[in-house]
Structure formats: C-alpha cells, structure tokens
Image (tube, rainbow, N blue to C red; front, top):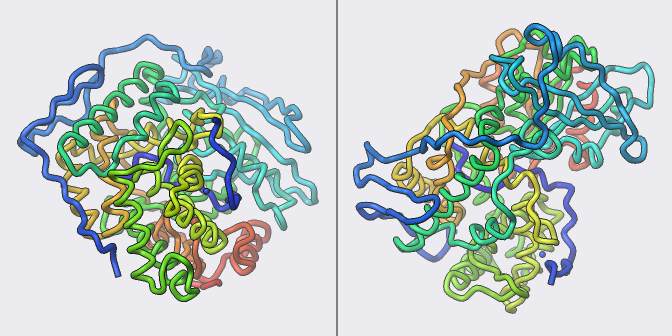
Length: 536
C-alpha cells in the first residue's frame, strides 16, 4: 500500500487546542491555478552526502539503496533474557510505578527480531490508568495512530467515560517515544529539509528535494541501524500479543485510531483466535488498491470548510469557489514570497501543512482556520506556521518529537510497493487528477523510494475466524477518507461498519454521543452494533 506523504499526516489532532493567537516560536469548484505536473529530466545527480542517481528509464529507476552496515546501539537496546524462544520474555513481571496522578508506568523487553529472540532485545514502554469500577473487564489497549504516535500520551487525554471497568493501557510502539525510538539527524537539519518546496515545479527544486530526502534517510540509518529493519506493523502486533499475555488477558481488547486501525486489523489476521472486543476508528487502507488516496480526504474536508465559510459570508470569500481560490492563491503567493516569522519563514509548504493540520479537528477548528488564513493574508505568518509545526511534531523550542522520525521509518518499512523515484513522479501526476488541490501541493512521495531498508512482508488481511470487529468511519474525515472505512469493513470478515456523518479525523471520544454509546456498549457489554448504522 502507498502512504503518499512524508509527514505525520495520520496523527490524531482532535484533542489539539488551536489558540486565536499562538505563542511565538522560540525567538495558528477546484483551485483556480493549474496543477503542476512533474517532468523529470534525464537524470538528477546531486553531490555530497545523500547523493541520488535516477535513471532516465523508468523501468530501471534506482530505488531503495543498500547502505553499508553500521555499528550503532539505539537507546533502549538491552540484553535478551535467558530462556528458549519467547520463554524469557513471557517470564517477565510488569512492575508498575506511579508516573503522575493515578497513572502508573512500566517497561518490558521484546525481541528485536522475533525470528531470533535470543540475539537482541529492545524496550517497550507502557502507561496505565487502572480500572476504577467493578467488575474489572481486563485491559483495553489503545493507540492514537501515526504511525509513530505515543500511546502513553493518548492515555492522558483518552475519553474513558463508561469504560471505567477497564485498565486503560497505552504503549509507545517499537521505534517511537520511550520504546527504543528511531533516531535521525538533529532538529536544525530537519528544519532545513522542511523549509524546502515539497511540490517542486523546477528541476532545481526537485533535485534539492531528492537530495534532502536521501540525506534524511541516510541519517536515520547512521543513527538507528538495524532497528529500521524491525519496526514494521507486523512486529508491533507481535509486541501487542506479548503485552496481552503479560497482563494475563485471554483475548485482546483494543481501540485504535487511524494507523492504529492497521495495527488492530493486522492483529486480527495474525491472531484471530485471540481477538476480543476491537474497535478500529478512522480506518486506513489495508489493501493494495490506491483508488482512494489520502489527499482526496483533505480535498473533501477543505471543500466542506469552504462551503461553510462561503455560506457564512466569512472574510475569505462569499462562495465555496472564492474561499478555495483565496487559500490556494495565498499558497501560490508564498511560493515566491514567503513570510518572515522571526528567524523562520512561512513557506508555501508550511502554509499547506498549517491548513491541513486545522482540518483534523473538524468544525471546531473552522473559525481558527479562517483567522489563521486571514492573518497570513495580512502578512502575519506565525499562526499558520505554528499549526504546521503541530503536524510536523515540532515543539515551540524547535525540537522535533519522536513521531517526526518514526513516521517515515515505519511507513516505508510497511510500504511494499518499492517502485522508485520516477514512479513517485508519475504517481504525483495521478494524485493531482484524483485530488486537484492537496494532490498537487503535497508533492511527490520520494521518501520510501530512497529509504535504506527493504520493505517488510505483505499480508492479505482478512481476519478470518476473528470475533466481531467494529470499524468506525467519518464521512468528512480529512486524513483517512470514509471509503477506506467502508473497504476495511468489507475486507475484514467479521467486521461491522459504524458511520459518523461529520467532519474531522476520528469519531469516538466526545464528538458524537451516538458513536460513543455504540462503542461503549460494545466494549463493556459485547453488544455488536448493527452493520451500517449511521450517527451524527
């Protein structure tokens, strides 16, 4: 499956608060312009570290490189426990200790390579809110998506109303957060890469983007080494089953958002007899069919916003088409004239990501989106730059969080296409036909074409024999288009579909009382929703 973006676009931002004027960063019908197309030159050969060579013949395009071995010990590597196979790992005891309020935390070890569990172990980090009501129903594992989102952080904001009989446990998947994170180069170089034009319309811009992408990938290999080969969703699912056994649950109870739905669906394929009550909210594409791409969801969400804005006679335009023209016109102006924001700039790419970030929260963020775009039109770029930083996992102090690095590392290991740089150019042209706005401005996805490790094995995910699974999809979801939820519910043999008729990424947790009631009844009482039920 093709991811399509090299930034954490699946991060669940529904709980993010968008201030009317964010604090300063350390020192918030189709577009009228014609979508650009990429016409690669015969070859592009940047020099220096991260050099990339692209064949002029697509069939022989040079894709993922094979780097030289490196000797590196990532943070979180530990000696494997004694014992045969997984026996030493299963003999672990969870030692919970207070980590703030009523939460408790623990670390466990898991095999780096499940095919050779005695060779090397890594650390997994967990956070739990213990059950506060009886009878206790076991553990509900939760994941916020990403890939690369922190399950430990989700515990702090998770809506557990009605779920008090569960221990709520979030873990940072391998390669992320406190669980043996992927390391790459420093934040200054990450800033430099993110300042580049992500949708190049000259060969010079394309060459710069290719070189920067390759340098980033090289740095991840240099700092993380063989860890990059062992952070696939399949291995995360193996970890999840290990955790299930360590908390002494006969079956897995799980709620995953966005990429977390891929974790849950993959678990159903690998361990169907261990599936308990599983909810998959904001479903991703688990097939090889790329007919529906992520940019289509962003185009739909932006169009819905523009329709509302035009009807409300907002300052951005008196009709949907006028609002869209205002936003894309701003982006086009920033192409040649970025706005100074202290010692940084609001570039076209940052402005695109800033608008995208605000679409995650649906209608609640629409007034902020109006205000942030208006500020940029008035030559104040700080609000949109702040919003872009949230999507890029860049803190106010300028440091990037774990997700910025883990997102491409996990995505590219899971991406089995491996079609090369020129195929990425061709796919960008196809994306613009499917999604004329974001398909253009998101640019080509060179990240996986130049990633330094080969893809993990692919699975045909059906979940045959699993207990009923609840798939939830939102009709206005920007990051995971609704059709993906329909297709996941069809593909998983035991799944039922719950539809939320509304905006924003993810549905459970305070957005819809109807969705919340159905999910809680299922998780607590085992009451499976009627397939196809719709909520508002």
